[in-house]
Length: 184
Image (cartoon, rainbow, N blue to C red; front, side, top):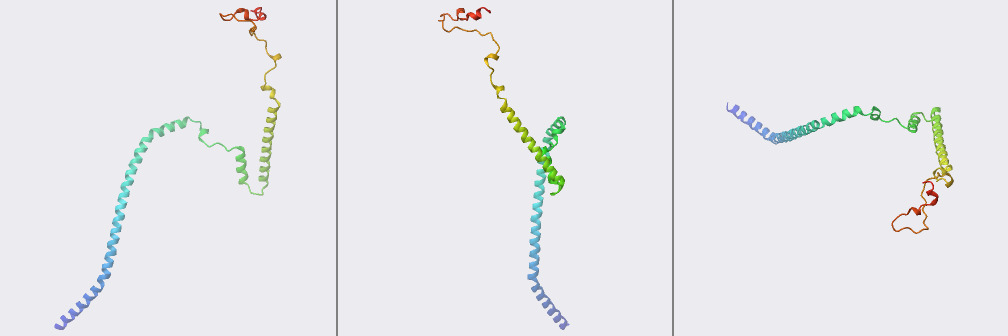
């Protein structure tokens, strides 16, 4: 029994030595696990704070949406009154539509060449029309001038004789032209 007790004591000593050797490794593993738990706790707290912040933002957005409901209803009712053509984008200009057609065609195709020639003809026609308008405006400068005295209508103007002295009391009937007194 003494031998057995001595064997148990040596085995326990060896086991104790192994445990002492494992303690630094276990201590390091426990420290890493504690650090991981702390990081997880920090992340958890951040997520809770983020969730609370998002709830607060959602409340603000809900309040804003409730305040915008009357305006949205007004805009919706007004859009029903507006001409539907104004709600849709306008058709492209003739030049723009032709350019879009040209870019969609293969580079050396016959239809592309025809489209380019057609646009060039249209451009020339527009330039010629502008030149004709300018020449027409230059050719009729008489329209804006005053008519000659012969073409004027005879009006009933009072002619005043300025050679005579005027009376101190105001206008004298003697100052009216004798030619006009007969008509009156």
